[in-house]
Length: 125
Image 1 (tube, rainbow, N blue to C red):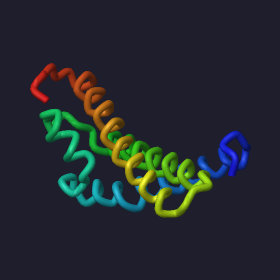
Image 2 (cartoon, one colour; image 1 turned 90 degrees about the horizontal axis):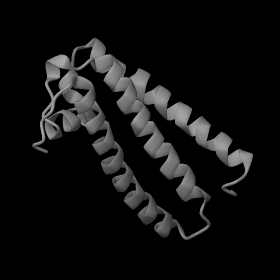
Image 3 (cartoon, rainbow, N blue to C red; image 1 turned 30 degrees about the vertical axis):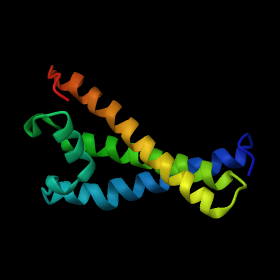
């Protein structure tokens, strides 16, 4: 699959939409309705790493954003790696490295955004 072709973009957005739908509506919003906020791992990671107050977080809004970040990471890495014409074990290795790098980078940016948004000026990362 050529990276510049329209089919690549259509494939990317279809995968992105499916993953966003599944993570938001099937997994995370069911947890919010049952008041099980502690089981959302990504949000707990951001809260603990940036020392945020749980009381000030709007969970429904943040869960949608975290679900979108997860979906963006999975869809972008998946479509990029499968479009490469290399051996399957190299695709798996490259995909794993890209997943880890994007997860760390995007959740770091998102945590800093939450710090600014909530108005907490703590410099103890």
